[in-house]
Amino acid sequence: MDRSNLKLLVGVVLVTVLSSSLTVGLLDTTGDVPTDSGFENPEPNERPINSERLYEETIDSVVTVYVVGEERTSSGSGFVYDDTGHLVTNHHVINGAATVAVKFSTRGEWRSATVVGSDPRSDLAVLEIDNVPSTADPLELRDSQPPQGSDAVAIGSPLRLEGTITTGTISGVDRSLRLPDGTVVPDTLQTDAAINPGNSGGPLLDSAGQVIGVNTARADADNIGFVVSAAMVDRVVPSLIESGDHSHASLGVETRTVVPAIATANGLDEISGAAVVSVDSEGPAAGRLRGPQRVETVDGQRVPVGGDVIVSIGGTRIDTDHDLLRYLALETEPGDTVSLETVRDGERRTTEATLVDRPS
Image (cartoon, rainbow, N blue to C red):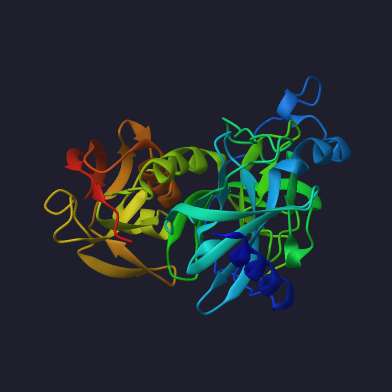
């Protein structure tokens, strides 16, 4: 983008109204038992947050993303990912963009940006800029899931209020988030740190300044925000940089988390697993997994009966629908052959399936 186009973009974004694009519906979710954070000798990443220090150390690496498209003008946030000019933000922030610019708020420096890649299935995107400011160091991704209840800090530009910091906790882990278009993003985190329109794409940080995840959405409720995990960022972003997209593996089934009514109707010994409710007739599970043979009413609930209940994949125990989605997203890729253990009509079975690319 030449300087005249950048000036035009800056002018447009400063006088247009923020396009609100964050509110989402919720998918039924499950959370892990809170992890012991170790009050006597907390790990470095779980120590109480010094918000002032953390802000000073990271704010130079956080940007406001301004987007002009054919049908809308909007803004969001992002952060420096590496030392070659790549920035991470959300797919929904830059979707439909004709021109993109970013602003480093502490220095007031603007840069034109190019969309390198975007993945609607994880709601992640990568931008690239030239001449990254010398003070804007890449933010490091956390390499483990944060304990539930640990402190968290969100930095971004809600409502275009650049360089805003909000604090809170990790309210929940192992969530699955359903976006407005029906896309389900697994391995999301829940936080009560304030996330509002414009925060999308910015980092959620732990007490060591490492990125826990990418702020993505807020629910139609108070103090509930959702964050794409650092593990998903680490999985998807390198592919976006290399090829512009990312392939997600699919088993070709729809499942439901086993609840007491499903366990009762299917004679299961445990209230756990992912019950298969449909099988794609042309997918990798066709002829290997079976959907329900009938539907029964148990305790006032209509539940699937007679189909497979997935209890293990690749040797990993599956307790919930989320566990299956998370394993497929973070541990597999299209073309992988996975072993599956299921319960059908009270008997344990094993089979294999070769995964395919998950449809958009």
